Each structure stands twice: as structure tokens, then as C-alpha cells.
Length: 197
Length: 85
Image 1: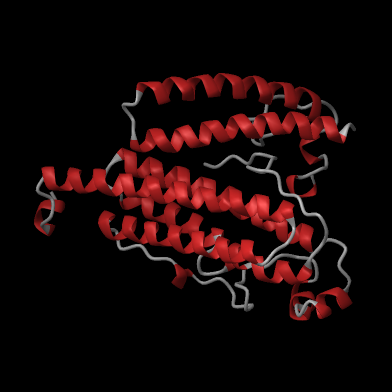
Image 2 (image 1 turned 90 degrees about the vertical axis):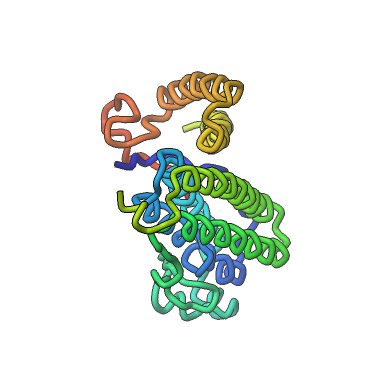
């Protein structure tokens, strides 16, 4: 069960609409290292995690990522609010207007639609937690690139918040990886036959 | 509707909720940290107060029965939605 809260995790403000930046930041909505992929990756991997702690962490970070996806959606919405077809054309994003008007769509900065190929689930806690740590680093770097490309202090502020969250999530996944490795070695679970018991 | 007041009261909820989120994730990997657990429980108490105050004035923050009572007419459908604020 999930409950919706009618509030963003952190306020999203823009100083002025900026369609050209919306075209770039949409990659954190539906790109390979974006928030949709992040939330689905963790929420999907939690079923096969061996401990209550690991199931909890993936549930909680996966849920927080859904809130980040909503923040990015709100940002794209505000950056394109009131933009005319000509504004989209001048920003090099007329294709967005043609197919979606002011609606949102999960694509990367090149217009490539989101794909489940961006995420993995091996059902192995070491492989999956290591993938999660890499995912957090890739998202962190993408936010750094985006922060370089906007002059709007309001946009920089909310992107910096999201950047910080990637750092924290990486830290928590790293701690969980250590705990799981200890858990598995104690129970001599490194061999497949032991894991099935 | 007093938009500035709504944003101000919402900010209190968001701030305390952030404290709860951060402590929640920390506790997931440090479940025996008593100090963090006490802080988390304090945050829950404060957050509950801020949520109640906000909802009393601006309607439910949560759907499906988690946001408390609605005045007439059904308040859930009222704007602004989060991306409009």
C-alpha cells in the first residue's frame, strides 16, 4: 500500500520559465540515471533481500525516490509553464510540444523514452546493493552536470538538495552492503546449496 | 485563501518530515542507536502537531483516510496541488 501526501518533499521554485533547461533536466525524470528508474529499481529489488533491515532500506529509499520524481516533474512543469509553441521551438524542444504539449513524458535529454533496461535485479543482495551504489553515484554526477548548466538560484537550490540525497543514499547502501556481507559470512551462505535451505 | 500562510505552515511540515526521513534511513542501518531512535520519536511527535495544524486549515494532506476528516465539500480535490505551489 502507498499513501499519497499532497506536498513535495522539498519546495520547487523557479525564477523564470526556461524551456531549454527543462529539455535537459527531464533526464532526471525518465533518463537512465533518473528518479523513475531509481524508485522502481529499489522497490523491485526489495523482495529478494535476505534481512528485514535490507527490505526496509530499499522500501524507504525507493519511496523517497518517488518523491524526488515528483519534484523533478514539478520542476519541468514550472520551467515550461506558459511557454508558447514558438518558445519550445526556440529552445530546440519543438518535438516535445508536438508529441506532449505541456504534458510530461519519461525521456532522457535526447528524447529517448525510459526503459526497464536501465535497471537490474539479480536476486542476489551483493550484486543488487552494488548496483544501487553505482546508481546513486551516476545520479549524483548527473545532478552536478545539471547544476553547472543553470544560472537560476532557485533551480540550483532544489537540484543541490537532490544531489545531497544521492550522497546520503550511497552512504546508507554502503552500510547495508557491509551488514549483509557480515550476515552472509556468519551463516556460511556463500554457497548456493546453503542459500536454498 | 492565504497562500503565504499556507506555504509557511507547509514548510514546517516539510522540515520536520525531512528530519524524520533522514533519521528513518539512518535507523534502517543503525537500528540499535538509542539517541537516533529518541530523536526519531521526537520528530514523529512534532510532525504530528504540524500536520494537524496544517490540515485543520487547508484540508487533508493525505488520501485514503490517512489525512483525517474533510469539511464540506470534499476538500481533497481543492487546488493548489504540490506542483502548483
